[in-house]
Structure formats: C-alpha cells, structure tokens
Length: 439
Ligand SMILES: Cc1ncc(COP(=O)(O)O)c(C=O)c1O
Image 1 (spheres, rainbow, N blue to C red):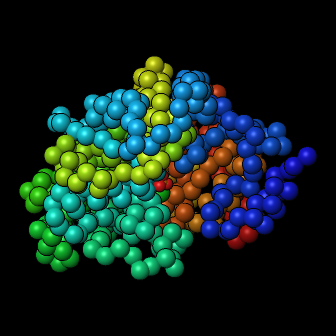
Image 2 (image 1 turned 180 degrees about the vertical axis):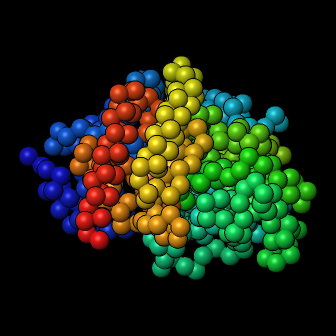
Image 3 (image 1 turned 45 degrees about the vertical axis):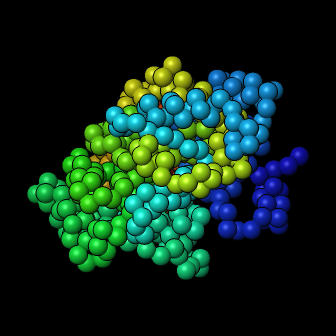
C-alpha cells in the first residue's frame, strides 16, 4: 500500500521542487471541510485549496452539474463552436459584480490569466503603457502577472527581466504603515499618495490601469480603511485610468459579501475573479464595463481551453449554492467567531502582533516582539506543522510568511470550526512553551 512517505519519494523523483507543497500528505478524498489522506487520517481544512473551496469540497450540486455536462460535451472550444453555459455564466457575472452599468465578461483558465487579460484590455482601451500595482500584491505567476506580484522570494527571484512599465505603490498596511502614520489621524495619506506618485514615478496620462486586491490575500490578509478604495477610484477616474480589482481570493463569499469591494461601496471598471468561482475546476473571468471590454479587436482575446463548458456548469452551480445555502450570512458568522477567538488568543499570546479581518477573511500576524514587530517566520511554520499533526490544515501568508490565514470552506460545521480554532489554541501554547524553554 502506498503511504504519504512513499508517494513523497516518488513525487520528489519525478516532479521538480519549484511547485511547492505546504504539507507532506496526499489526499484520498475530500468532502465539505474535511480532507482524508491516503493513510486514512482525517483533517479539518482551513486552507480550502488556497481559497478555492468556499462552497466546500465536492459539493453535491457541483458534482451533479459536472456529471451532467460531461455526458453531453466536454470541449468544442468557444472560438470554434459556442455553447450556452459560457453565455449564461457571463450573464450571471455581469449581474452580480459591483457596478450598475453595462458589463461584459470573458473567461480564462486561472487567476493569472484573468489578470493578464484585464491588463491587455486596459492597455488597449487607453492606448497607454503603464500599470500601477502595490507592495505585497500577489497577482499570479505567469510573466506579466508575476511582474505585478510584489514578493521576490520565492515568487520572482531568478525569473527576470520582468515586464516593463509596472510601477509600485505602498498598500494600506496599517499595522506596518509605510508612512509611519496611524489611522484615522493619517487621513488615509497612503491613498492620496497616488497623486504624488504621478509626479515622482509615472505621469498619470501614461497609466493604463491600476490593479489592486481589496484585501491582500497572499500578502497577509491586510484590510485597508473604509475610505481607501473610494479615494483610489476617484483619482483613477479623474485621470482616465482603468481601476482593476483583483477579487480572485476575496470573491465569492470570502468576505461575507459576494465581492469584497461591496464593503467599500466601490465599483471597479474591471474585476478579475477565479479560485472559488469554479468550485474546484480551473476557471477565471474578466468582467468589465462593456465599452472597455469591447475595445480589443476580434481575435485579440481568448484561448483554446478558456471558459471550458464543464467548468462553466460547475460555476453556475457554485453561484446557486452560495445562495441556496445562505453562505454569505454563514461567512459573516464564521468571520465573527474567528475574529473574536483570534482577539482572545492575542490577549494570551504575545507573539500575536495583529489580528485583522473583513467578513470571513480574518488573519493573525505573528511577531517575535510586539514593539519591534520582527516577523515570527520560523515559529509560524512550526505552528502550521503542529496543527497538521493535530489534524488541522492551514497555510501561511504575508511578506515574511508570518500570517495565519484561514480559508476554511464556508460550509464548515460549527463543531468543525470550534475544533479547528481549539487546535490553533493548543498548538500556539505548545509552540510558545517550547520557544521559551529554548531561550
Ligand atoms: C489575489 C490573487 N490574484 C491572482 C492569483 C493567481 O491566481 P492563479 O493561481 O489561479 O493563477 C491569486 C492566487 O493565489 C490571488 O490570490
């Protein structure tokens, strides 16, 4: 019988080290918020396939939709013979994404590809070259998306030269404010800095688009102040710059709204989505103002597999299930509980420097010392490993991989959630005790 160890050895023999693995285990089956590995060990899933399983593993309606679709046709290529699920899903996304204007949607296979296409549309529509992105942003791993991504190691290191005409601003990271200010007395200077940026980095009339995550995902679940996106959007609007929201990780209920920008009452010109939309199947989308989306010439956008019909059917089922299972309000409850618990843990463990969140996107940042805020990177890894040993799967985030970012499926039961949170508590205690003994 194969074990995690024997498969790991095969994995290492046949697969390069680049495609990383957080946990040295192999899945046998997964349902709801539970993953069972090939040795039969059961785990509560607080990773959700990096934010893909918002509606849970193997949701019954998604499975039914996929089964039904594969009996009919699996691939014709939308550019050769069109099919209804593509059109139906585009219509649904145009309806549910923020903004009360005529929108159009195109599909791709991943988040990175959605980002790439949004930039293509913005450049084509404005006939300008430059893109503004943010520090701590993660937009994917293809070369343009990677160039927009901020973190050097492990993501960018060794893969340059990067795509030119990308300019980077600090994000509204209040815990580590780049301007050394405090909210609200800062009056959100980090947002107004965009005007200054036009003088010091790139002229506004050369900027095609600004791309931003409403809450940093990979960057560490950083939640900007409520005024932030309204200010950025207004400055973009005043300067003819396309405001692009990357809702790839924040979308489809993760912040207890369908899209995170709803919290900020801001409608982006273009929004890119992927991850949880496909219910586990690879699917991304670019939705934007019709007049922008229609700028590229016929044949200028697309791809062989883009908007695969099986993935589109799965996504239609995902949208229905978010509604049928009332997952937005469930996300609100989960988020409240996690935030409350993390704040309570923060009172007991000094290594928890910051707790922050929006809806169900709640993170804790671990530091060696609350005054110096030195990131507790090694300790975070130990915590995650110990949680796995105790039956809880988590992943890190943040510039220094020192943020715990739960991405549990929103269908997680009350007792699973409770067990997961208690496991974090127990693991924190053990890790901190060991740390103080070693000192
Ligand atoms: C905010 C954000 N944008 C883009 C991406 C890239 O998506 P993908 O991995 O599907 O290419 C990710 C993936 O983690 C993401 O979190």
